[in-house]
Length: 326
Image 1 (cartoon, rainbow, N blue to C red):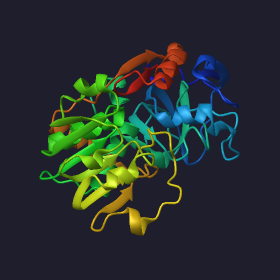
Image 2: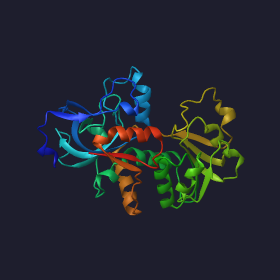
Image 3: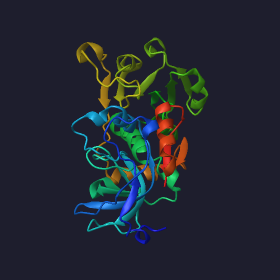
């Protein structure tokens, strides 16, 4: 049903939280459909990907003063313009949206409609089905920025992906292999080693990779501060390490001494995915199209199964991106 055919609805279904909310307590509720205002567009949400940061929001961050409460979670979505106002978009145009405060500073994507700042909404020309399209925005944007903006990845590189059996890890592996790199991918679960068969080498990660002769020239660390010191010791001289994820559950490096703990000739950077652009979005989709890549999808849930989707997210048992289809 095109968005203009249902644009007269006064209410919509959404997830609304104002306190710590375990997955078991997540439910849909009826809320007022937002009205467009200058500088913003109304998007009919067709699908959205789920992210670790939304789990953090529900389980702890919701208590912070900087979170608007109550809040509709969700930092990304795909859909169609329902009300373009004077943005330059057209009603019915296919778009993606991500970051910029979604699901924290203002209502996010766990809803039938999302009112979003037009500068964080991007046109896409893609024939991917909605659920596959929804696997792209935040995950592939973060992978793209980490690999090319931060790591300056080249075909001749050997890339270490630490914590590779998450959606971001799969996307980075897919992009790097398409580029022509050798990829070493790690997981801390032996049972997940077979899931890394697309890598040139799959390594069981016990937290001490520095003892292995990996030969990596670039490293994408998705585990984060928990193992970052070790990652810095796991690459060749002249290498770049990008700290992009926080899968290890440690968010900061306390008492970190960069002079002593960053090896001479090794470079440390990090990627913050809050500033997407249309140019980057276009480049990502052009790359996917050129290399005939299909976004990795771990599981897809219907919107009325949002509780089950959150249980799957919190449980960590899904290999790949979790997507909710409306």
